[in-house]
Figure: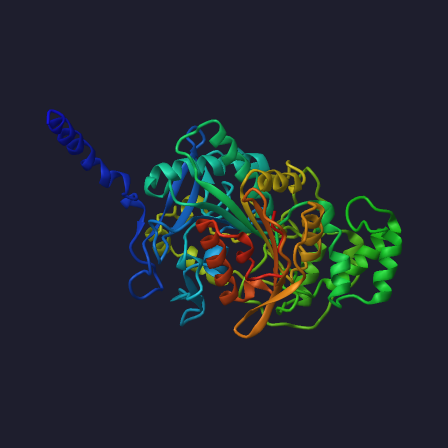
Length: 509
């Protein structure tokens, strides 16, 4: 009985602390959104986290809590690529909680409608603008805009540590990192920082379970050598041209090649230039006068600029997808050329009008706690504000390491992406040497074939899944099913092969 007063006192001391441990920062709460009528489908938070106090380097995030069970559902970080692309691309055009519709007047504020296939149906989503200088993220010291893979990963890790301090109620939730295109570099390097931090016993401990990469930049040899065979396989170039370029280049279609090979590659690029690089079946607009100005002022090879231009008009594409670096431009462990540097253009064949109007509206910025244009400038989907260096090399070894140490990895591809073709992704996944245990088989959605998978064995509860879908980002229902399956399987620990519900090759180790 003597212990009872002590126990009572202990409970009296602990219980008042409990609300503090489960309270998200109210100053970051988003209560409503301009353009949307009604209550938000779940709680939203947004704001800045400072990753460098001395320089005033601040990364902007937008958090959408799970609409199902945020206390138990996974937390998923979403990163768009570029480098230089804002993750509001994913929020506005891909997997966010809303579909955006043009306003009632030209240039008017877009109307927002609930997206029934949002990934926030089953997980809490963090959309992060990274590195500083991208999207709403900024620094008071402009030298911070000279950056690269390693610095970006370190800053994102600092962001996560501070974010989980700010939201302690999510520290025990399963945590995944996801994204597309150049996030194929961002994600493994960030995961590496997280793992190293855990090994150093940094607090708070991040409960990383794995990561998900769509059409991701991985290894330059695999990525950039795949576009010519992919173009031929998809019927985009003739067999004669394919045989000519193959004979001249001997399987190497990028980097330092001989003059004859370069001439053939330039011809292939000219044949493909009217296509939407990120979805070859989507419409693309090339106005001759605009394109001519862009070519004259661009840093594209002169032999490419002289090859001519179509006069065939296409409707402007309304949705963004893919978002990766310019196809085939020479990149190694060095400076990455961004699309706006090629004559001041944004991404070809695409329009970011809806996102730009909405995110440049000062009322929108106020309610999401973003800095005004007077301080950080206009929002850009793909900025040339940063000077970026690819300084980490191939990601293949990263994937080997993570799958050997217990992390779940999903690699998925849309089969219409010319920028990072699935053929290159399939080749590097095969290079890992994982054993196939079942034959190529279709999976279905809505009574239709939506992709194919090939399971590989699971050992020590580790896994890598490669998946291909029929233009995944253009099929929101399919994308949502994949997201549901992947995070649910990851959280429950069931065999990860189940998560390949949206693609056509599954590799599990």
